[in-house]
Length: 106
Figure 1 (cartoon, rainbow, N blue to C red):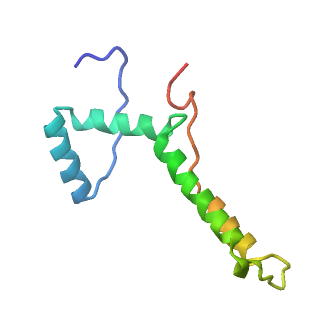
Figure 2: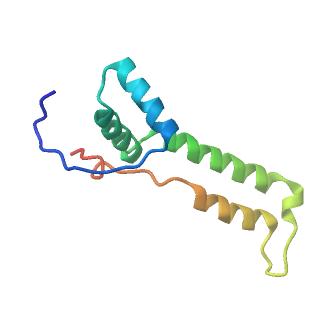
């Protein structure tokens, strides 16, 4: 495989199961493990990532379910409702989507 741009060395640690699964997949699809890692990084930090969008849609659905539940209207001494407290935590779990620049796109 000839690359038009130089590669920077990078070290990553995988647990034994991840390594074994990636090695098996690499052999099956005949793609070097290093190439699979580069693809995974590009997918994760690219704009419009379906995994990130689906994950965040799940978080938003959970927030809607919490807010729609009558029991979540209960208020604490702080004045905030149970739904507000839970949804604040759920928002923090959302994944940040990459952008064109971080994915190396024009």
